[in-house]
Length: 102
Image (cartoon, rainbow, N blue to C red; front, side, top):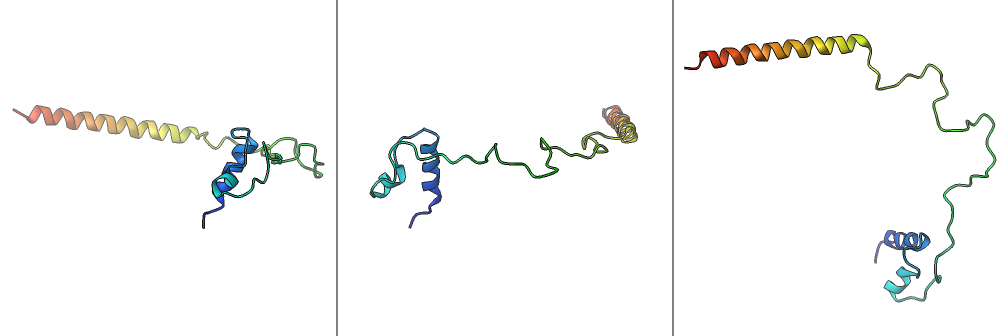
């Protein structure tokens, strides 16, 4: 027995207008369930009544919300100091390595 997920995918193609026949019925040699595009069911109703207190758009309503990607300045300074130290240390080791070779 075949999985029914493939039939739903072909029905979705028919809803979007990519194909204009009942492809699962054609594949399984059964009578077609519909001709042309099946009735498209919208994923949501934009005219549905809103609940009390529901915001107009999807967002965090707390004013103290900060950007999660923003870093404090002490982290930036610490990273800069560590990066500079590693750069100087690597340069020192590289200089000693080439100076020691004949």
